[in-house]
Image 1: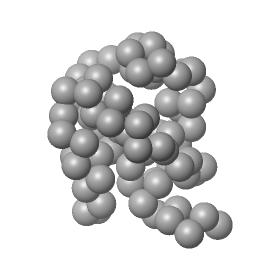
Image 2: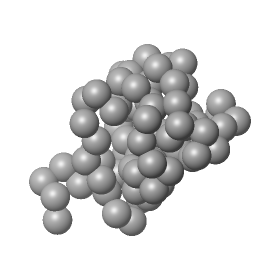
Image 3: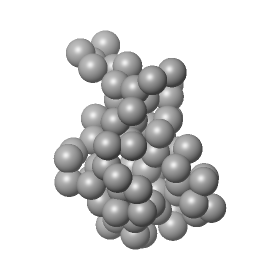
Image 4: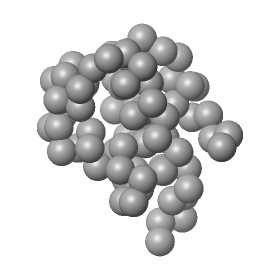
Length: 76
């Protein structure tokens, strides 16, 4: 179990939430940030918490037009 598994899971859930709020698919987000759709899917998957680089996190925030800190909101 990764040391920060809960945080990775919450980041992924936040990415999925804001992506859906923006009405874009995983593929569209992946194309905007220059990664594969599979990588976006892995980030969002709550059953397989995936670490995200700061660069990718900032790219996601930019693509979704939200402050990066919104992706780091760990309230449940």
